[in-house]
Length: 417
Image 1 (cartoon, rainbow, N blue to C red):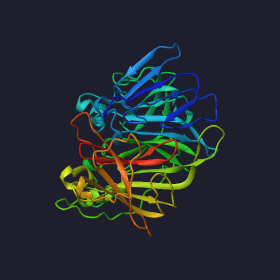
Image 2 (image 1 turned 30 degrees about the vertical axis):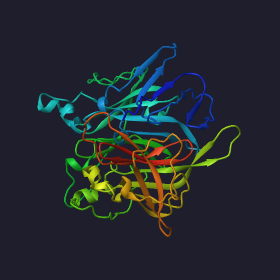
Image 3 (image 1 turned 60 degrees about the vertical axis):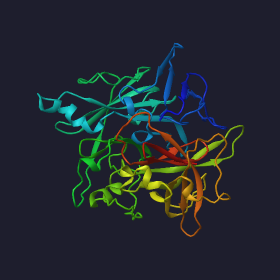
Image 4 (image 1 turned 45 degrees about the horizontal axis):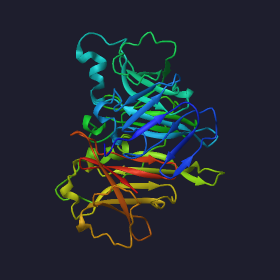
């Protein structure tokens, strides 16, 4: 996703994040990171990362080495400010899934050659923009998440500081002194028919356990989903209710795929959404108790541009605990999100406006909320820089002023504005 490279500078010193014309300032001066953005995809994970170490030396990465070609594709990764136990926000943290995460068990077992009892495989790169998070062993800068599975799944976080390359270090037992062992809970939901390899997307997500007030990591682990770190219950933010999507002519989802989008966490995304509060000299945001799910149509990954040309396609549904007023208004309950491409969409000119400078290639959104007439929104489309098989996932996009949604589109990603 590379419509003009986005350069992100992370410097040790002051605290502030500039997102367009909106800025926020963290409340704790010890968190030392600065990001600025110009053009391209305006949030993390970014197209280009420039890390300035404590010696003032810049380290530039057009790709995160472990993620390779998928580094700039948001469907695979996640990024948000962590929630603190006192109900505020911590620093910004990005998690980049390893490229070909679905082949992880092969790497763990060396594809059947020899034993892998002492072999850990890097599964994700974590980048902290200024803070540390001790429950997951994350330090400021880059960190590597390792997984083992024989005989039982286990994990460890190893801080790397300015070194973004988690690729080559495989055998990490005995663990180095800086490593933090983490618990792993394997989640393989009971389903009829059983979930198969294709029902587990090769992605990574942040999760939050409300009972323990701790963040955790969700990531594909073989033919299952794993929750790493956090509370022992594995409750997380829970699961959305089963949903019904409008049919798409010519595409009939399997029963397993229909069930998986609400039972395998990598497909949908869940978090407590942010709200704006007034602050002196800056925009303050705090998490609310309003839990929001965003769930993809089970056929989202199979849709081609021809499906959208002049047709409104039910691409995703946002399920809200209560009303949420942001750039896009969502009401309590199920909010259906439709996408359309081209002049045949017939978007009412009085209904939608695109922010100045927005990239738009004739993609549009219609949001159908409970008890109200549909609203129309601008969509920013950003094409993939490579021909890749990208899973049909959706996720929240954390922003300083509100939260919007990434939705997988044909050969690219669509963002609601």
